[in-house]
Image (cartoon, rainbow, N blue to C red; front, side, top):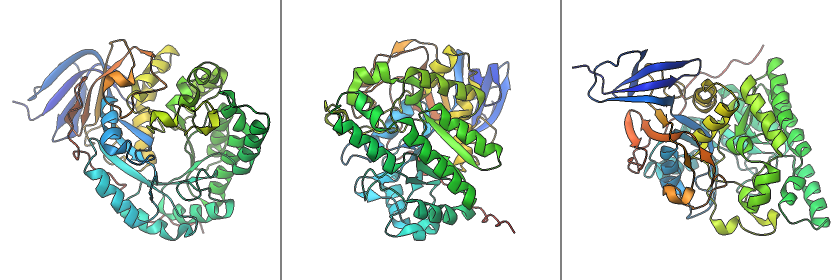
Length: 459
């Protein structure tokens, strides 16, 4: 009898190659062996035929607590498990609790710990009135990155961080090696564009894109990367809806700066002229969904390696906050945890993009970005046995029918998906069997970056 606990056989998708007829062996919750050919003996073995065996996804951008008494971790991590996502990185802008101190981080860890069905890491941020004073204590408390915004959605919960303060924060973060992620919309430019839209009396689906044209995004993107260049802090744009932004990021990297950039799955799937027109407020997201031509540009950036991460920016607003006929009056954001991986696989296969990109952009790169790669992000010996299994079973997505979402709506409803998440394993334990989420609340773990020595400043 082998001492392997579990062996799965199928098409193993790694970040650098696809192994046909491969297998993954698990022991004590860790990846113990990756091979090809006949399966080794184990207490539990599954020959999955043509199924795809991927590393469990790490969703780099989740908002579990944006609306009080709505989703919470009990539901966000349920959606994650059903979607092949084994770790979520939750944002710090929670209604009633801006995560801007060690105490707030601990409070959120304790709160999430009782509910989470998969693993989680956390972002921290600052209160503008306090400045960067608490950044060090949040690093000690275990945050995996920091989040700021160049646009002010709410003066307290989601505040604008002005240029000088953003620079101070970047300087405080730089010695830790953690990344500073920033919401990239120029406040002054957006407000001027909104005023024009309102003056013109435009309230239908067109209003949102017109109120946040590409230039508002690109101005902020350049500010973010220049601030990183000036301070030595890893600078991260947390979502980019236009191809030009990825070109800017690549240019900074070519100059030797740590400039990363994230593409949300909605920018790769939805378009303005069809989906936003049809869905209205249910497709309102900041930055906005762009025309189909821009969507295809982003897929080309996925193909050429310019994109660093793919995430959801998941938030499950109640339906009444997404159905106002006045487009600008709706809340911004959509749920996506349950379908990110199948949507990406569908889009990549349709465009001839190798599935290695799925393992790279939704597992390996996020693990490295948040410095969780000591235990997460790859089907590699010694790392957590976080595994997503997809089978070739075409189906039409329906968020209400799945039962794994706190809200019964999704902008992805009605999309025909060729591959279904048939199983999700978190640290070697089956948490989703293709029909039901099996993980109990509280079975997820908080994951923090490894402690490291401060980076030496350049002499």
